[in-house]
Length: 416
Image (tube, rainbow, N blue to C red):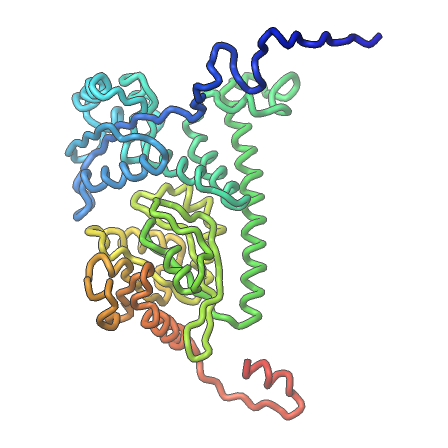
């Protein structure tokens, strides 16, 4: 039997599709998530000269803003070492409760990586969400990951970060794990969750390893063409993507005035002059206190740095902490095994520190492998190209070869 639907009476108003009952059609519905109000806290142990808690909190505030939060306040404390229980001292931790009533913050962000015990203690005291610098950076990476490769590596880093902090979060994601006949005797719910997340980490590592092999295959193809490779490295937001766009002559990478705007490496052929060319790759930026989970997870991508013949280290010439930033970049490069690679240092944003650079009145100075450039207006790019070519030429080796007349193809390849 077919049930008929009665025709609606045209005289009786009915709610339009997509309009909620009780809401006027003229009133716009705001579906955007509410902006979180963040309060920042740091401990200054004095272990890093030239980089104090106030400077680190300024960078943390930029990270929080990039993640979409509104920073409503900050506190820091001078201590010989962080408190093993509260991160800050007990008295300062109680002041955070008072700050919550004054500012109404709904997320507390610590400037260092918190232990699970420290995070739990602070959450119990302030009665709100507590995250650390590592979790904040992971969240930004998750927002900016656009490609399949980037999302894989970010998820792996998040899983490895979450594992020691696991508190019954993952069982609902498993359909095959758990249940009758699958648990060992006496296995607790938390142990089951840990087993599930370890299995996911194992699978993610296998998929990231597939990415590494694909990149290795692409690198072998470049090696067969005998084209030198150069990797752009540097602190986040130093202008690496803008520099690659300027060297290529077109916008091949989206450049934004944001921290970690670029996660996925992009390679392009760049002309250096005198017929020389090189493959230049833009890589992910580094930052102070970079989470080790990210270095491990992005190792497949960062191998572009280790495979490169030379490096372009981009430094923000207008940043007061450029020396500290260079030290951070060098530490990460050494961890990757690329700390001793030949490099050219490009002091970018010259137009912000030198009026003549903004107007292009004088040639760009080159001092011991360092060039003053402006990727925004093109100042110093010719000098940078010449310096890269000189570094690559220094890697050449002179050989004497006797080519038989019958090996014409070999001779053509040599000339190429």
